[in-house]
Image (cartoon, rainbow, N blue to C red; front, top):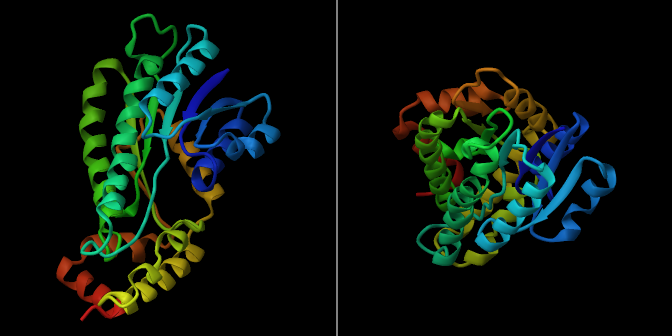
Length: 279
């Protein structure tokens, strides 16, 4: 049976990915921070899903998860690893608590480093691995290439993930392990609806602009693709014989990705300032 580790499967894209791979006869080892967060997947796919309870910031818990997977594989190798777990908390960088800023990097960047390093032997770096090398997909974001107001910590962590993936992808050629980066746009999940809290900065010069940003984020999410649609696209990318280095999975791609990437920053920043009332 083909096997894969997917982090952050309790909701959103991660849960949809676990469902798609299980439906296609993969055994999915899915990470959650609490055992109860995996109940739905366990009930739906009892033969194809094994929960791994760990936070990507906890090295000891990750190592224990590796032991669980290794015992299950019984000498075989993983077909793949998808690093999906991440956080997104909005706020003005002047006022956002440093702990929140640091948490983005510890989860979205160092969390990926911890997980990849821990599972690399099961993906094909150990000589005794009996099957073909696995492949790694890192879930970034449009924010890995673009940076908007009030998402500086998140965007910076995703920019870092892009660079980390680019370097690691080249290094892993020595083992034949392919690494691909996926950059989704807006997805119909409540990540930013939950992540931007204007009330935290009430009375600050950013108060009105943050309220506009929260409304825009909620509206953008509703215009985005569903997690299931994104997951199906990622599943197909995972199985490409010669995958590209990076895929931008963006609804209304011309407007929300291509044009923004082509326009000078002086223009896109003026538009953002006008939309958010940053004067």
